[in-house]
Image 1 (cartoon, rainbow, N blue to C red):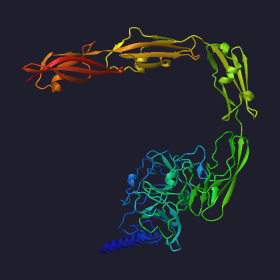
Image 2 (cartoon, rainbow, N blue to C red):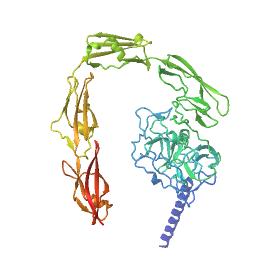
Image 3 (spheres, one colour):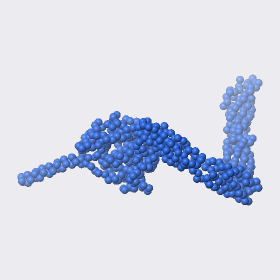
Image 4 (cartoon, rainbow, N blue to C red):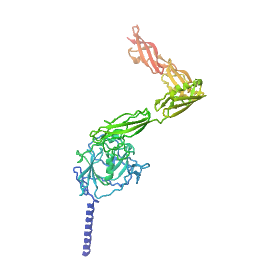
Length: 611
């Protein structure tokens, strides 16, 4: 029994020793970690240093090929901030996204989609999984600055090698995180898109400034000019150049520390580029198609152009100067030597010049070629022309009726237009000075008969004063409209309504294409009203008691006997009276209104007041 116990103790001790050794090995190679660390007050961190246990590290462990669906920025658990920026709706992810393409069809030179490619794509370039990550990323939320630290020989991140200007947001979380998924393009909420996105944690990413679509020439310029200040809804916005550098140089699993400090970092805060409203490309985008790309002071957008004669041009359209020393794009100080005369075909050389804040004046040249490729335009006549008297249609009549232009310039009819007539057929030919011809054919149709308008029978001709007669109600009184050539309907009738006495005159007019016009009229009347006195021997205690006086009458329609809305006034005239009563003649006037105007009814009675 003692021998068995001894053997058991030996085996248990050996197992415990092996377990402790295994834990020690796994701890040192980083598989087992404990707690986390913060670099907000130090520019040095060890590549193998274990985080302390006093703060939780929300590390994203999402697989690199996972599709992004049903995302919500609120799930990122942001740390409350005392900042109160004006936040622009921009860039958190769309709840419903397209499917991810595992092997995106990309143009390796421009990193843009080839035609037919998908839009919400994971970054699929193969990455090494080094024991020591090459870089450590620190984001100073308060100063909107990103500083990159390079790993040294001993695994310490002492050396700051790159600084980037960024835009964080009020809801950007503070803490230490690990990057995961990467994207060429990423669909975001508020119907915007972003290039070169790297997931930091949850729904928080590094990415470019938002675009209106997944096309590189739809940059939201106003957002770009916010770089360097709090502007996002939580993500870290960067220039394309910087976002692309992160996606290419920092493998998934790179540590990102987000902190607040008034010190931007050892490399300072880069000056953000400011761009004009017409710049819809990120000027740092390395795409060869980027018309605003420049790494030195330059005049951008200068190129030869071909324009049609008569086109109004602004020689500064699409032209900007990039001042490298000032760090901005500007049109101030940009000059053009001339504006081409687009009324005359030919070649015009324009020289652009710009004096930067430092250095010599620079110049660029462009040739504007003005061409005329369009034929003249003939207007003023329809292809079928209706007239009352075809005998009056002559060549002179046709020439007076038409106008002829070429690229917006009027042509002399005497020199450039000819008219050929054969019976009811007319052929008009116009020629410009650049061997372009236009032919227009017209047929003359004689029509000397007026249209006919018929109203419905048995229509009501007297209305209550409250009735509002308008064009729509009048149009319903039309039974039919006809013409011997043109098909007409009640909608083709012009209606005019004017007061006429205590009523309205309605005039209906219709015309055909030859100018024949028919007009008919009718009168509709409004009801009249009268004042009825209830008591011709009214006695009141006070002659100024208007309520008592008004209660003694009613104003009614002469047609229906119904009460009529009106405004009542009184006039009082004192009579001689007698020993028992003072007597007054009270004259009532009742004014009522209709669409025809206003009308007043009057009535008088004697009212007595006890002495």
